[in-house]
Length: 414
Ligand SMILES: [Zn+2]
Image (cartoon, rainbow, N blue to C red):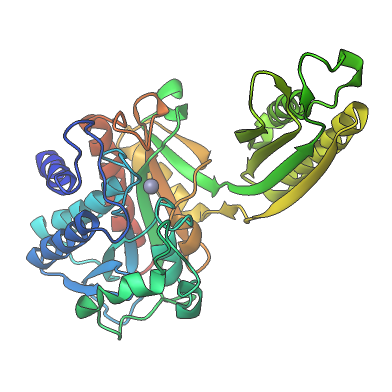
């Protein structure tokens, strides 16, 4: 592997969409800069002798044949889009490290048993369409063209129409994949959290990807004059909301060891003025867990607490369920291969779950899937301050290469 080449390739891609004032990267799904990056990826793959395809969603798929062309491919990759003013590594690192795996194989004339496919997914971030991992959802067959006609971006543009404009590049023969079409999927990604840095570990082997259950809580008290309403006669929706917020935090803390986090990230106060007792407050509650059971326990504790607080305070409430997703368990065999690759290379590691969602969530439903995390500075991501070191990238990529060399062997079963 060639560390300098990884750095310069990252830099090549990050010229697409860099905001020179903030240093942030702006490759929003299907914008000019994001598509330039996708095209650049396809060109770099062609230079490596790969067969390159675009599918209807603008995912770029590049194939390196193996010894046995009838075997299922081993897939490696991540996404190429970013949030607004995002960082240099979220997504891109997994795409560039996948390219480095192929370059390493080419440099050393290594023929793998299974074909290798590398992929740059489109539209992983929810920035534009308010839904995440759209590219990999399509790739895995979970996003139909009908569903695409119902997804709008923030300006009212329809996803289906947006991707039509890419059509000159599209070969309609590139169909979504089905169960058992792929031998295994590997995604390398920055952690986007502080655990690896705090625990002084070089890589994280991801066992689960947590998923959210979300609620909208509307609290209704009485808006009245802050001067003339005596304290015992108030129905203050904001003080009730404050108790709810603290309760959500408290219950989350009690279930921390079971891999649950609970957050109130949004509050809207009405009338939100100095001289009125707030009569209406809306909160958004986000509960995530690496497994469903403790997460749902937290949800029911929160529901009980909301009922208790509002009854005591004489506040009406409506709790709207905004929906839930299933947490995903990743493949244990590949995790073991990652672990032994890391051990042989003397690279420190720990098993962990991912609190954030990734393309790997979708792939895990159709093939054995695993993820390698590397530390990022202070856990900061989705920000121009997102950062990691070339040493960490080198260690992660080394483990990725060794893991792929194993997984792409005919006799290795995942
Ligand atoms: Zn990402």
